Length: 113
Length: 439
Image (cartoon, rainbow over the protein chains, first blue to last red):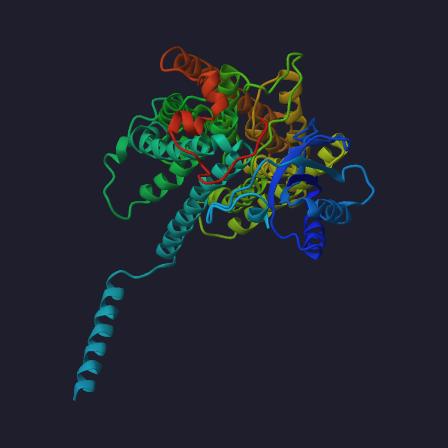
């Protein structure tokens, strides 16, 4: 079992979800996040005072999958989120100890699917 | 049968109405007097709504964690101010004068409840007094102790505003004053209302010091973003709307002048917004919305003194200069004098109020310098501007220092960081929302 965490551009979320649906990956958590990366920041100004914005708005996806879904999920996220520009995002794949479905008490691979 | 009875009653009612009319003939004069009452009261209601405008502008231009505090300040300066002005302020401003201030009409003593003009005039002047009072809250936003602000609200409508007002406007009722005797022109209060409020705001912001984090260790200003620019924009539109009562209402007469003054007022506001936008665009590379919004208000404040006596072209010019001036003034106070005024109240009301008052000495079609009136009127206007500064700023400094030394004027650093909504009022403006902010 793996936990896939991806940071993507907010406006690519719908494309990523569409690609994931094609691979029959439907369960995910999505949160708004702020981040700094290779994209660097930009300058805003308010009432004549300039300031740097280096924490940019991103969307964070968390998807727990069984081993056979890891590559399919990662590829789907890349297909949906990639534009080739700096700022497309990053994907992290982490080992996952266990997974418990609260309603039934199922554990492990059964609980993920 | 029944129908006949109704008919009879109707005829009787008509006959009675006819005799009533015959006893008090409706002359053109009484119609005009009633029209004046109605127009002045409608204008007072429009000016009252400006309180909502101020509340929205100030809440929008400051941070979410201080929104309740700024709304409470706006609610309470109107409420405390209405009471203080009724009981004492109105008498000081418009009662029979001893030369420096009025000494009658306290609590409207001697005025019979009913149709007396003084009641309409009182409510009209109350909303003006409260406008002067509420100007200050924005400049002192996000760091002022609430009880200290309540004390200030009481004193401005009790003493500071009415005594200056009696010098310029006392003669509108039973009083009189040295400024109006000199021929000082301030039709609707660029100086009496706006500059007095603006210079008090300057004193308050100076005694308070800047918000934590406003200046870095080298003294360079940092941006502290307003949390709701749409609300601030709504506030400016409300103020612009209310100004159609503020200036045209100051005729206190329902005649053709109200339309003319509405035109000069609107032209100046429009020119102010356009020129503030252009100035910000040229200097800051972008048409900053908050500056353009301040620009509309700058035009309105500037045209308030000269609105009845200038040509439409002059009104455009007066508003345009106000629009340029307000942007330069905001940058000047922010970057050079380093007085932290989150909403630009000092620049909009103090500086542009002074400009508007001076502009009456230049553009007034009867007395103005550019219309062959010479320097006499301009000199009188300058005396009024300087008197307002000395009175409001001087007294403001003394008052705010006294408040600071006694009940306290500024919240603790810890409370300022957490926000005044929690610290002063124990509640949040946006319950259930997560406020995402890095300042």
